Length: 144
Image (cartoon, rainbow, N blue to C red):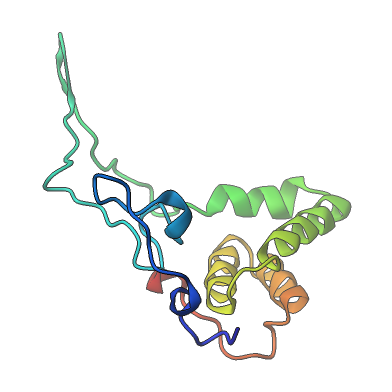
């Protein structure tokens, strides 16, 4: 199958349950957000209900972040400062082994863009092992 073709195009028709919900085996992605037109979040129907406790309501809200805080700093420190060279080779082998196993090229490119935010060296090594290094400029991870 070509990397540019929609993987759903060759799938058999979707079967549904009695409630009209697609059967799990017919849905490419059962998580949100996803790249395959699967389920989407519905904050109007399923808003966070919060919790009421003696001292007031507990809610989910953004915390004030430090300028250097992001979702990738700790992972980058682990890769660069904690792991040995052998540990890093094993990590890369594990990531590549899973990403090479039937994962579409565009998803691999987006994943490499996320790994690049952890550490540029890590992303470069993953991309090289996946054969992405010479393919084209990196895909932005934020285009998820």
